[in-house]
Image (cartoon, rainbow, N blue to C red; front, side, top):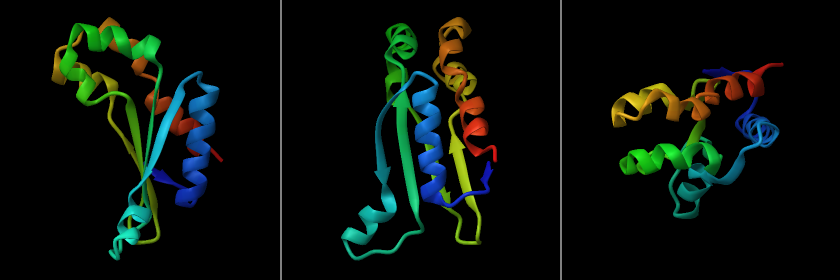
Length: 121
């Protein structure tokens, strides 16, 4: 998804959307800053890690390998061509990949809406 905002503003908007959605922001990984700290260059790239244990725990209990994918994540990056982009893993796809019953993935399915809300002007 394209963002009309800078990486920093997109990350801040996503943080607010996560909190407004009743989820926990577990952290933000700043890959660009990490690269810079070792003398390398990388476009501004950050990953937000968030979720709701009440929603994710039943799915992970049913299929423990799902814990490799949870908590949920959103990647925000500068594509190097003047565009900021946001990507996230679709909960339905995760459910199919790990064969998690659909009803257990339903609480995790709001990520797309959360991102769209955060990017709305």
